[in-house]
Length: 487
Ligand code: UDX
Ligand code: ADP
Image 1 (spheres, protein in one colour):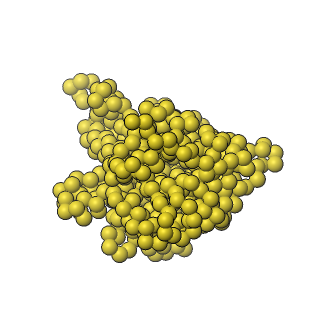
Image 2 (cartoon, helix red, strand yellow):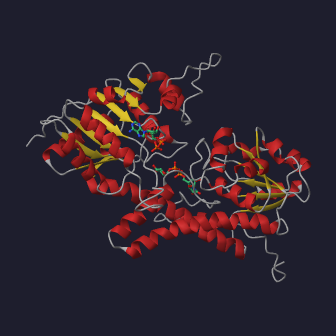
Image 3 (cartoon, helix red, strand yellow):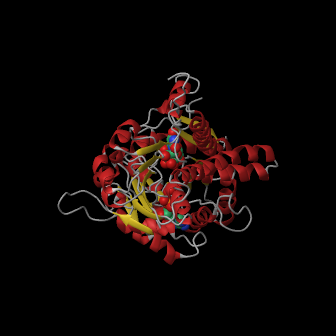
């Protein structure tokens, strides 16, 4: 029997103009000139930034609220053509055939599931708004990462509040983009996952969304599943990726204690096709808005399903990550003769990884906290993170009791050279490319001696730095063991 013709989607609304909604729907607009895309947000400042004017000299869009390589070009091409940023959320929803819900789902800070469960109140508020303003049937797509079976709650809210006669199909279409490569990941995804109910209507809605992606993604890359599998796959994918990093970081600790080199170990393991080479880069610890949050979410889900062993298993990935950060900070302190009190420590990089200005759960935040607790002076440099954001992260209420003291201990610098001047140690916390080609001779000359480099990302060549005069510690590399038997 021929498949029922799926009417094409003509108007898309995306609720939430953040790291996920902004880039995702801009790339949809780029590839689907026949579809009008409205990205709506309650945050007027954010929308104003998306609508900001180009730089008068270069013509570049330099003030977009999300920094992603290639994103400004995409927005420049589509904005005003078929891509619009607005605070008029109600109108954008009302006019759309398909609504992406791309709002934030942070970890709950209080109440039941505090510290683990996802806070779904933004998703619920968006769902209620869709129900109250819609005068036509729509496809509602979960884009935000949500716990398994959130679609069922959305359905109940929509059915209880929408006008009679309207029909809403709920799809799960999780986003797998990684920050820093978002545009590339969206343009050429490994897969697009669409989950729907296995009903005639559900499958038709999934086909309509598939047709949107088919504008630029080969159809065989669009994988359709049941709703709950799709919701869980996002959590599972992030948990598996984070688990690989914690696994290699656990190996890094063994390497440092034995004289093995974690980069060689990772390479040797990655040559096995079953293991593969990606996501085996030992580091000071993973950060970002997703890994920790999604694993905590999975832990909560497992506990609520009365699967405590499963919960404990995944919890260990986070425990190992916390250990990686504290072990690295401890290494700095012990190497600097067991005290960093009143010493200047330069922290290079504050973003959670390179090519992004995002600092959420960045390892650098934890490192700065450890160094401050040891009474060091911390000098920070990051090429992309705004100064105001660094202060916000370091003085977060509930984490820091004495904001004044933070300001006395921390300085933020506009250049590596200024951050490192008179420092006793340089700590590389983010793998920015520019740190690979620094003028290490000049940095060495300006530092106190002995001068130390602690490379938390294994990006600089320790041999070259040692030739300059530095004492170097690279994550996952033990001291070169000169065993008299082998010498
Ligand atoms: C992640 C997932 O990769 C993406 O699919 C999902 O949609 C969102 O979460 P993101 O957090 O943007 O993306 O960045 P990712 O590249 O995964 O890096 C996360 C953290 O792990 C970073 O702090 C990174 O530096 C660290 N990392 C990554 C390592 O320490 N070692 C590695 O080998 C890879
Ligand atoms: P993510 O990384 O998941 O994209 P962000 O915090 O970057 O998270 O973005 C989520 C966006 O969703 C924010 O800009 C926030 O203002 C917006 N948002 C949250 N709730 C609503 C809502 N009810 N209506 C519109 N926008 C919302």
